[in-house]
Image (cartoon, rainbow, N blue to C red; front, side, top):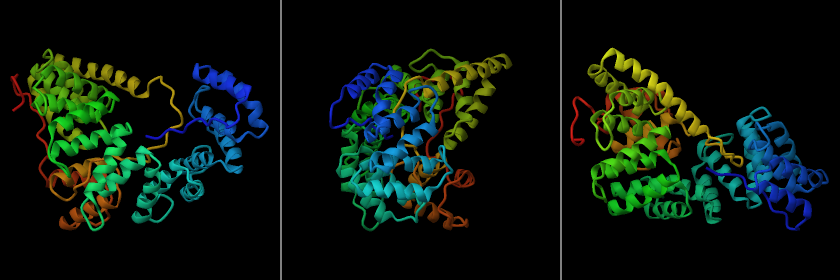
Length: 427
């Protein structure tokens, strides 16, 4: 995830300094009042800063119309950061009618000026065909330009494009870019690098390295990494088995909304592994996973809910349903949070159906790249291969119907835990 940064003008001025100190202290209205006079006088850096204050909701609810107006003024005077933000507004339809082609034009203008976030946005549009024809080669070029400037998200996406099999792809370079992004602190890259070490994909299998990178990503609060870390402790991969730490990691992943983490937590709760046995809480977490966005986890949760259902009384099931409502509220509060963040770049529909399709495709050798939820050209090609081999229209698009066909055609790529009775460890 990228964030727009407040711009520090070249010339230090008292009004700017006063506003900056107020911003750093969390006094956002004071920052606005200190900056607004200079912004109205034409200071394009402070015009951008005010746009960011309004977009990110530092002054209350996000005010996209005011943000748009300030970004427009700065963009008209040639500030690349403002052009990039305007592009995001046109891409997402914020305060204006959505116009992906106009967004691409703004990205390209800022990208040509060397602004790395705009180069990244342009690469994403080219890779996914958002307002422009799909062009993987051009996407790779722009990812390279942003990556060479140290933009971790571009390094990660470049690694993702290179990790797949095929002419012109280079697994060694993919690992190198993943590592740069991971060392730059991008949690998603840290998790994917850990996964590659765990599976021995492009590197020698090394559980200790996998554990290291999962830990870093989990410490940043990435739910999928927290679940992966739990699995490492659960099975003793690169570390001694520790049921308590596994349960704690599963709990963090579950609260963060990771569907497999919710099912794994339900399993250890149902069986009392590393945590006190609690069928009601186990049932609650399965119910939450069953209606989550992860279609694969939802399928597994439905089957697990059926099996837990047979072990519980009517009163226990009712209590589990009530508990699910409480836990879901706590989960929503945690994910929405009260921490204010500077204008995030949208994840542009990183679609859960795509991630679910990638899991099936990877497991049965249609796909060799990481599960990242992006339906890029490599994933689309793998989907078309699957569709052609199973008599489906070769659209290359991941959608709910395709996942249903995959689930019916291919065995589950991982065995959902079943709590027929309390056991000492997962078989």
